[in-house]
Image: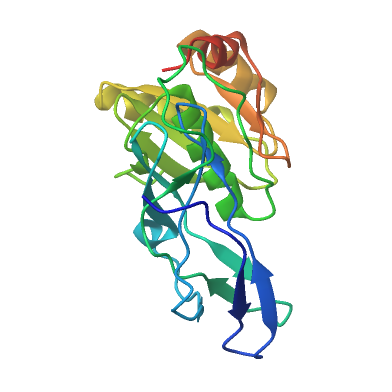
Length: 229
C-alpha cells in the first residue's frame, strides 16, 4: 500500500502551463478517506473520447482492504484541455487499519458542473448506500444515463427538463424485467404525474442539487436513504 497522495506538478501538453494538483479523497464504506496514488514519473495527457470504463480507477483502501472504483483523476486547464493525471495504482487512507463501523458515515458529495459529474454523484451515492460493482447499464434508457449494480437499476437525468411519467414507467418496467429494484436521479426534478406514478410503483425519486447531494423527493427515497441497500 502506498502513502497518502500529495500534490504533484502537472504540465498541460497543449499550452505547457504548470498546475499543482492534489487528488480528491472519497469515503470508503468503512469511513476512511481514500484517494488514488499518482504517478509522478509520467506526464499528464489530454482526455479524448469519453469511454465509461476509462473514467474510473480501481483503488484499495488501506484501512479495511476493500477495492473500489472511483472517478479517474482529471484537471481542467485554462486553455480548455481536460488533463488525465497518471495513476500509479493502489490506494491511500488517512487512518490506521480498524474494524469497519456498523453505521454509515456522512455522505461526501462531489460538486456537479457537468453531466458526467451528475453520473459520478449518483454512482457515489449508490456506493454509499451499499450497492456493489456499479457499472453502466446494459440497456440505454430513453433519456439520461443508466447505471446498474447487483440488485438495482438507476437512471440519472442530467438535463434541465423535469423527468416525465414515461421516464419513470420505462425505468420501472426495465427493472422488473431484470428482477431488480430501481431508483431515479434528476437534476431538474419530476413532473407532478411522474411523482404520483413513482409513489404508486414504489420508485425512489431523488433530485441532485449542485453540491452533488441527492435530496429525497418521495417517501420511498426517504426509506432507501435511511436503510441503505
